[in-house]
Image (cartoon, rainbow, N blue to C red; front, side):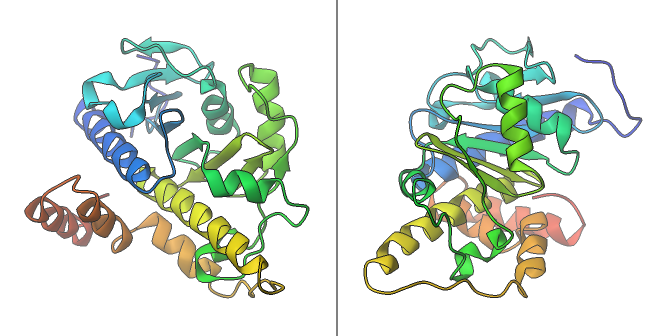
Length: 253
């Protein structure tokens, strides 16, 4: 393991919990059609310069024991691997954005299409309001497998929640695993809705007055995440209800 940087660094129990939650996230975003046989989800290990990521096979097949530990140089330090070739995307974001606790890179169908439009995403509905500050488009998006290339992508991402990799896919960030997954799901739904509505009318963006409330829901997804776990049969109803109770105790779901 990398050297602990912070006395509040995660314990081994907490790391195992992160792995379990990461696997749950892979199940949910695959069930939602956001993740396919390729793509990756990661989670920062608090207090260290390391993160967890699924290995280079379909994420929906991963178990907690398969999850790899990687440092901020994008080098695997634990786990069998192999790690995804674009692991540098995650490493570069964690280096530059201490506010980010989880990252997704995937090839969601409707998000790719909207990323090709001159208009980009138009935050015209509830799903898209979290992205009202914009979703930039990264043009040099093919095969991001070197750190210098990834750092250019991060500079393009800036402080935003997500970026379109033009013609390739998306990168979505969140305060934690659940928030990142919900953001990716909302982005894909917003893109699908936009393409549908553009065929019948001109779209205008909503104001961003509700954006702060949506951000708070990503930090504590007390409604959306239990529902998604149930819908995709990731856990039993009893397990989900027990998890909801931990929210009242101030713990992460």
